[in-house]
Length: 361
Image 1 (spheres, one colour):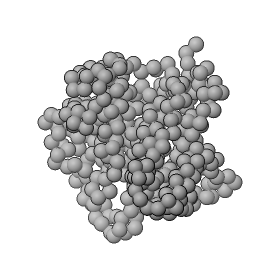
Image 2 (tube, one colour):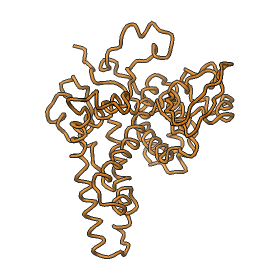
Image 3 (tube, helix red, strand yellow):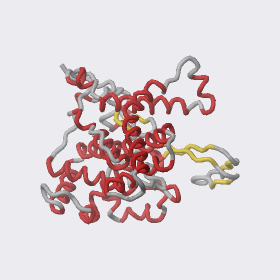
């Protein structure tokens, strides 16, 4: 459901045309009777969502083989079928955009209100740079992953955390109602004033970073200092180095002894010293010259969503009866995974696994 919200927001903001995927109605578990209804499963928004997710999972599987991925898909292309579904969903939007750009050029270069609104979108910029539909489509789908999945991941885990920490929900709702009221839409000033909301979002991003793994390639040879007295690490030039944002955000040597505990106040009290002394320990949007261009857009979108949600709901309960079954062995561990009430998975981004959900009889 949240993926539909972020998809509609992304397409309206980036493409200038909302695809109205929220019109599919309520989201249901796959194996529930409503979830198997043909009109529901065949709705374009649901077909696209399934294909978009499956394509990312298969592309992630492919990435593990590096340049040899074709050997693992010798007889068939694992990604092609799902991408064809995604293309059918987005190609009509791109076709209309290219036609609009041609019509505007034929009518002259005078900037009208309609033309200005279109030119100010990502898609308007793309069609002004090239008429190659493949380039435009690839760029559009790439930015949709960043605009839809990352924000949807954070909001999903945030709502999950609110269901597990009712005292956080109560305090956050009180801030929303005291700042915005029970019906007014938030302004930019409202969002800036709600410090606890930003702390709740940041704590969710810390424990559940939407992009849990990343990779960088060294330009030249470098010697990294060892950790906790270990020997330095030599990195040759042009070497791909994988790193886990997920694990780094839970390291006690970086975040303190309570690093695995969900506590938004760590972004407001004296524990903020860990972050201010080393900002690079918090990388949900990466950092430095390659920091995410959509950072503030994401914060504003998530804040708007939470305001509207908490203006209408005072409590949230996790429906454990429709979650994927967890292995009994998981609950015997000592790490954070043993405490989870859901199955956490990832492809390019993190998500809650509901692919094999069930209903109690």
